Image (cartoon, rainbow, N blue to C red; front, side, top):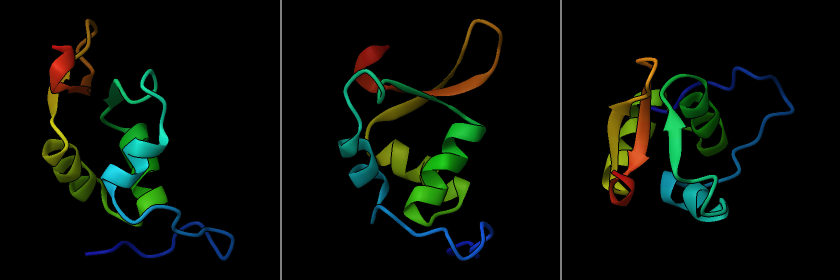
Length: 80
C-alpha cells in the first residue's frame, strides 16, 4: 500500500524503488541506515511505507543489526 502525500503539494516521488534509491548513493552513504528516520526518508523518496522499505532493503542484501548503543540499523551483508 502506498502512503498518502503527507508533505503537501511540494512533495514528489523521486525514485521508483529502493534499489534505484540505493544506486543513487555513494558507496560510503549506502553502507548502513538507522531504522527510524532514515527509513522514513527513503520511503518518502520512493513513495513507500517503512515496512515496504525494510522489505526492499532485505531484497538488496541488507541485514538488520544493532549499533553499540542498541539502536536498530540496517547494514549491507558484505559489511558484517
